[in-house]
Image (cartoon, rainbow over all chains, first blue to last red):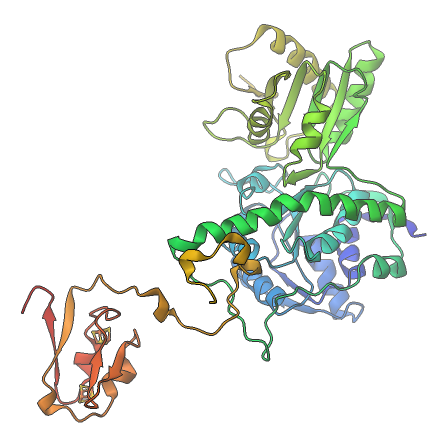
Length: 391
Length: 98
Ligand code: SF4
Ligand code: SF4
């Protein structure tokens, strides 16, 4: 059994990376990710972690260094946030296209301008099509557990795709929580080093990231997409194995008080816990409402999500990012797309809130639910509602 | 590759579209957007191979008589060979010139 400690989530994440016994960490500091790599730098400097720590000159370089390290067969980690993730953008496609296993913690942050270092999901949504697996975490325990699982997922021979573990900047990265740190021995057993079948080696020459003319690019992308489509089953297996070993189980879509609920609130990330309190209060007041939380954003768990929508009349989706000029928040528009061909589908109200670190309190969540139910019935004529904006 | 590119199915693609067999970009046959081409007066050629060394496209080969000559399919018409040739064997001509 692991030990329960009070610890800052960023530090716990770094400790989880240490437990995973990484070989290479490339990092450029950016708020609110900084504490993660700072602690890893300390661990390496103090000799507690035998890894190569590469302080690079930008996030673009950090991701490029990770490519090289992963291609050489080393267990690789980096972390970033906000603008840093965007600076990596083009290299993210290279990592997934080359099927290079690696784990990246993303302490989600808003994108400038105006300059904001606080949490929202704009950065994560901007990279949703880069071919990375994206897991959203809700609390410190999940951050630690999912970081460990992420290494197993990324290196699995059926996966070999890079993984982002998302944690809300500040709301999660900078809070101190009680966390059960898994035992080193257990992590070693759960996470044996799984070497990629195709690595750079002087005796087995291989060229990676080659030129693909139009005549073969489609096939290459389809091969990559097939890997992505198979990923969910592998993730489920790995989460199940994790549950057996550590006693905490995870699902791609999780329901809270959904039984018989006609209205569901949909959230991702650390807001889910606050939303739960609002759901509890409204349930006590007789409102028939539940909460549905998405953990796995890429690949999108269509099956599980559609199953959870059976009998639901109203779905209130809270996005922490704007799809500018689009049909609502990025999550809401994907959810609409996922349900469009279903015969029975809920009415969907898209809410955008919590931008740039704006808090959504329990009371605000109650208002979202109450307003949402009303809007679903009456319709507002708008594509989405902006939560708490001063008119 | 075992199969020509245009016959590869997605299942034939290596993980990460890696290439595990030897080969070179020569197979891609790209190089038809040139506006100038090298023109040779081999009577002054020393067969020194300087043009061969400097060609950024690697498209210059020795012909049967031992002279260095560009494979025009790959020549980008940059004129570096003409500039570097010590005996001015090579003149760059516009493509439409005879
Ligand atoms: S013109 Fe440029 S590309 Fe063509 S043969 Fe000369 S050096 Fe090579
Ligand atoms: S550089 Fe000039 S002289 Fe030398 S081989 Fe080439 S064409 Fe001949």
